[in-house]
Image (cartoon, rainbow over all chains, first blue to last red):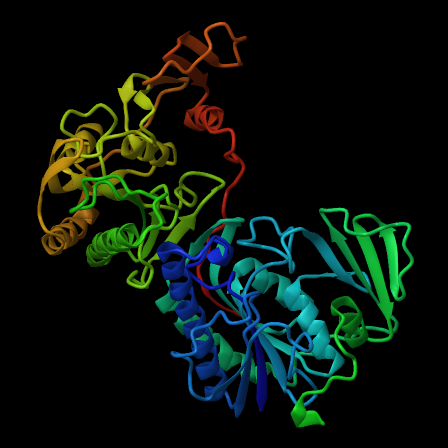
Length: 277
Length: 283
């Protein structure tokens, strides 16, 4: 049983502020970042312990927070394989039909979620993402991508609002709610030590819903719609595969969600990891 | 039994200087990390004592201005912690579901002679009173708790704050961990001793439940807001319920405490009533 885990930073218990990596390299930001790196890694370790206890034989972790190298790999459980770094060849490298389930750790709610702690979708100026009319945050997007490969989304650890979002999208998946946001920068939380216990327990139980939770499916063609706070799109300009609705909004239509991703991020559609060549 | 603890930094044993959140340098970063550990140590001691007293549901409000001051690496996992900035209200989850409230790291109100780092909210405030009752931050917390029928039973911090709360909420348990001798000086016990005292005091907080009355106000509530600097415009049109007495003083009248607080803090959401919440696995 192979479990693919996408991580993010904003849903980690004990964190209510944005990653200070853009605030300059000072002793204060360094201390904060080093602390957050350990907290994230320990939540991932807790999830991995739960997955292995529940029957997993392989856990692949995608260090998904924007920095690309956020978690402290010196403390990472030795059984984990880690995918990390920037300028990646595709969106969720290694997530394919050989995986048995998708999970997420450090999960935050989608942009616009009332009271969601650090809620956002990709960039902070994104109003919403939609796939064939269904609103998705980052994790919902990943769940649809997994669904393309027939892989179910089984486990969400993070903000209560993210857990609710994912349980609505993927009925039957297990949540581990370690904090509840009360606004963009505030939350009621359990401290990291307790969060790890809850995550381990939740991950262990999530293994038993594999086979019960249905992979998310999208009819073809797939229409991806995005709306931004800023005027990003030029209504006068014709682009292949894109439809500008107005200066804030565009749609990408393609055969599959994978094609949508490749168009959106300019990834090479023919790229395959070495283990699939 | 549910206990709501407000925390602050200035009343923690070992603290006589303001926290400097602007200085990003190495020494100040070390100092701030130490302040976080000192606060966490006192909070943990309080949790330990409160659990011994029979409180099994404890919310810690990480109330100091930085929004997230407690060192969460050290935080006792038996409590929940409210932290962060731009909050929808000052004391979320302090409501009728709580059995009692208390404070750790508390400092005395603005103008207290010899109170270490004495202030009320910010250094711009000279005096606050509600229906003639003078309060600092901890007194205001007791009033908000009283609004929900919840008694204030426990305070740890500067001795001057302890006396302040004993007068406001007779019968509450107090734990002085330092004796303020001026704004920036104090006679203090060392952190380890402070934690022993706080644990001991918190373990007795349950006994105070029967003898302390919730601190309540008669309606209407008249809030008097006196500032150090000339702040209020004497010529301005009167806002509903707000009366400028002179450039330093204004009065705000409302039906109850919450009416008044929303006028003082328009960014707060009066309708924000968080649901009871516990972390855990969700099926």
